[in-house]
Length: 105
Image (cartoon, rainbow, N blue to C red):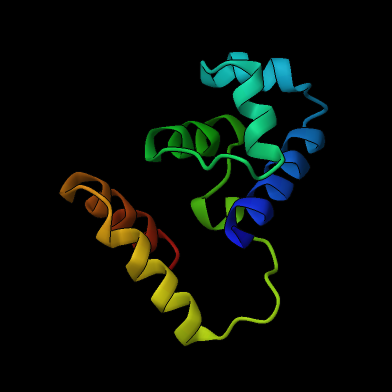
């Protein structure tokens, strides 16, 4: 749950840096305004496709989207959480995540 909340805070920060409303961002990425609200409050997490849309509309790299601080976790904790998430993804989703990770190098 911490990832969702941190992502939501970062999304809101990026949106506000462009002086966009939730409605404007929703229109730019072709989702309902309520979905943006749910993302920003940590109730939802975006799909891989939506992450790509955010990357494009904010004109940032994936690493910039995930540039937030999370406290109390170490590298092994993060690896375990990532593996747990990957276990529930399709092969195409895992490949997409792999491509995103390569961009972080």
